[in-house]
Image (cartoon, rainbow, N blue to C red; front, top):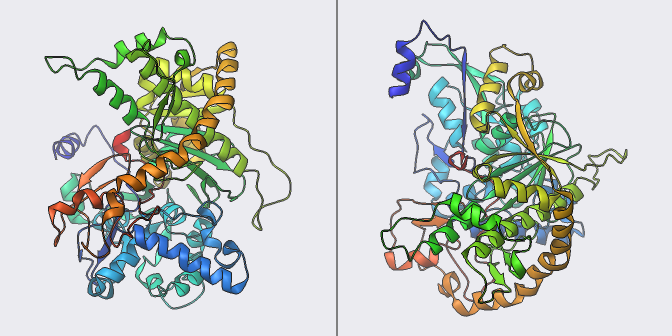
Length: 563
């Protein structure tokens, strides 16, 4: 409020031509015919639809089996889920819409619109209901190019143009065909003008009526624009509580161990694939908190002190290696039951060794994700050329919390063997929105031009050759052997421990708290007993006793707060 009042009181200093919003993706809203919310928003991290996510893959898989076809041949939209191998993330729009239909049928039937929080915010600003083609491509199983181009010509009637790019065959198989009628009828690409501020919105924001509102999208992928990652081969790493890796690819190719590549995202003429690590910055914080527990006055050891101590330890942490999958593994090995490990501990190891080993393990995992993304980009499909374009990215644009640690930055470069680039402005979503708004307002003619003018590199971190070779041996001979070496053990421990697997089907209808490995927050719900809370953290309703598949999978996206 203070910020908007400040802008309004300094109108002579500023001429606000346009605004643009980014939000978390997969926060799903059900609206009535007059665009009023019918229920609380299903937040992106809400994993209650884990069962529905599995149902989608099971139903599609069975249909493909009956038809004698590959699942991606019958349902091409599932290609983005590890080349059709799955899983589908519990956060995505389709499983959440299925959950509403199955558990709140009256809400589903009454819903005139089912959309993203992004779409609802833009509606409140402009009075126009439109979808973001980036959201549709990366989290709705849509073809971002087709839905953007086809959506421009939709006339509100039942025709092919109206549903261009939508997975209608999959909707029909799931008996969800009516969902296509509930989604926003029009889809705009990021950077396109939605409309002008309404009188009410302008008053609330302290801006002029009619100020342009330009289409944005999911925070992390708007952040790609702000980092300048918009050309094939561009690779960016967004760090926070978790790591998100995004690679712009020449074709919408897919492979096991990656998410995407999404056609028509982040912009209609682009494709990108993503990978993710569930616990990275959160692990560093965990070690800091752990070694601070004995301090009497409650003060925590500073990260700077731990950085300095760890910097004195040799590469490889004197024989101590860690596995960073404390909160499960996203990519390149999707395993929600995966857990972390320290291997090689001795009485001579100190807190500095533990701190460095955790940092190294995150960087090993990042290298594995990079390798998987680059390998996936070499795959070909019916949508690709046969020109054999190869993607090998030698540079990575990095942003987020890891950039505040000189040691961790250097370890990322040494272990991956890539040069890491830091921008002058590291708030990617903020700068990305400004870039998109400048294009919509006509300040620049294209996103490419705006990026060239507005994104500036500040410095680079090069891998140190000798140390890189040491880490190369450790990565290949130790880290890559550690994950499969502990897999059977941690899966057995999960079965013995119980947790979500001990809850019988139907004991509760919903969750009141969910955790994705990035963050957690409380969601107020009804008809739930507190004694069921711990069980529900791991995967929605209707859990099967003894099932290994109960833990929900959340795709590798981030909150803007993680910047």
